Each structure stands twice: as C-alpha cells, then as structure tokens.
Length: 333
Image 1: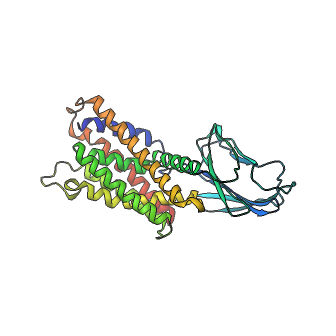
Image 2: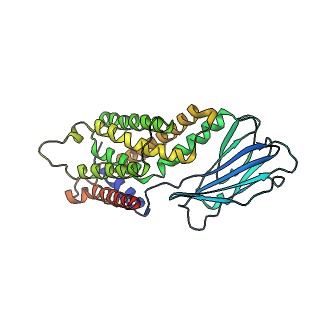
Image 3: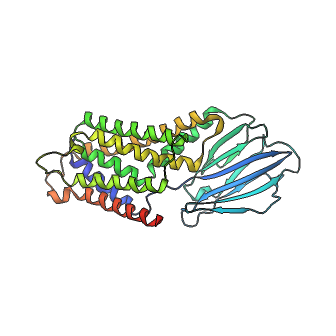
C-alpha cells in the first residue's frame, strides 16, 4: 500500500479532529423508568455535561403520569442526573404507554431508554432524531437490544478522536496488507477482551487513569512514526501486532467506561455486550476502509514530498495526544 495515501488521509483527519478540543464522544443520555407498582415509578434522567451549544433535550412522559415530587439532582464531573417520582392517575401498568424525548432533531445525542416493569422485566431502546418516540411493549425484543447497542458502539468509536487517531497511526505504521490485517486484528482482540471483562464487573479500573494512558498510547505511536529512519527497526515496527494488542487492552477499558455510562439491560447482558462490541468493530472497519480508499485513489502522488512534510501527520497526531494527556492529568489534580 502506498504510504503517501494514508499520509494525506491523516492530514485531512487531523485537521478535522483538531477542531474538537475534547477527545471524548458525546455521551448518550439515559432515561430510566423503574416501576414501583400501582402506577408509581421513579424516573432518572441522566445527561452529559458535554452538549452541543443550544441543545435542549428533555423527556416527555405520558400526561396520565404527572410528577409527585421535585427533581433531585445528582452531579459528577461528567454528567448530571435528575431523579423524581411520578404516579399514573389511572393506576394502570406502564405497558403500552408512549415515551418520547423532545429536542433530538437539533442535536446528535442519542437517548437510551430503559424501563423496569412491575414484574422485574426490563425493556430498552435507543431514541434519536427522526425516531424519538417509544411505546413500551409487554416483552423486550432481542432485535431491539441488538440494534440499539450495535448503533451505540458504532457511534462511540466514530466520535472518539483518540481511538480513531490510534487506528490511523497503525495504518501509517504498517506496510503491506497482511501485516495490517494482523495488526488491526490484534488491536480488536485486545480491546474486545478488556471491554468484556470490565463491562461485566470482573475487574475495576480507575477511568481517569485509563484515559490518560490511552492518550499516552497515541503519543507513543506518533513518536514511533517520526522515527522511521533508524538503522535498526524498533520492536514496535518489527512486531506492530504485539504493540497493537497491548494498547488494545487499554482502549478496551476506555470503551467499557463509555458502556458503563449507558448501562446494560439485566436480562440481555451477553447480547447487549456482544452488540456494542460489534458496533465498535464495524465503525473501526469503516474508518480503515475510508483511509485505504483514499490511499488507493491518490497512488504515489505525494511520494516526492520532503521527509519533514511527510512526517507532518505524525506531528499532528502527537500534538493532539500530548494535549489530551496533559488535559486529563490536570482534571485529576
């Protein structure tokens, strides 16, 4: 594969991502409805502090279920959660009632809706612009869980600049189709392992430290990209798949942190976890495919560029990674 094609792709991607001061994707909102019997339910409405300017999304519950308590806020560094009680005047269950979220047309934010019915069954879906209403069914459908969490995983990877820059760095580092497939596969295996382990609660890791290490992994990869003329290739160049697997473990913990913000449906945990992972892989493959298509279209047109200019994408990736790393370190001090 010509190296000049990915170089231009990296420049274009770097310019696009440089406009984002923060390296985290827009977290989806979460609307939880937990039935307490006799028409009463506890409502939890969780939104990220990171929103597009002017975005005003809010849940719309059935008119027959007015609030009977004031919202109580619960805030942390990343999100705000409001909790209140509602009571349906007709005393009927929540099955068949329609839930909506207003304001999604003006934002890219998705909303995960999770409803716990009186008998303990849980139904969930994802609302987004153009599909902002949901009628609570008597039983959850597996296809809804599959579609919802696949879409969330796909959108998470494609709106996560730090993860995308690492994948882009791998494409720039590896020469040849087979080594690239091997390296990307190793990265996939690595983050799939830790995503599952952490999401299932088998291991707990401090999310702030993981985010710093993820930025550091992107920085280290960028440094390696600028050192192409060493007389003896480094271990990262001789065995890029090993490096990709190791750093994939870190990135998987970051994915698990995002999944923890969303939550998993109690009765469909394996399916939801599988679907979220599939969504991430589809997004990653789509991103790599775009880079390779650009590389094929350009051919060797940039091969005559001076060496310092060919390393510009690596400098851009490294600069962004260093900024993110120091930003995240400052947030915990």
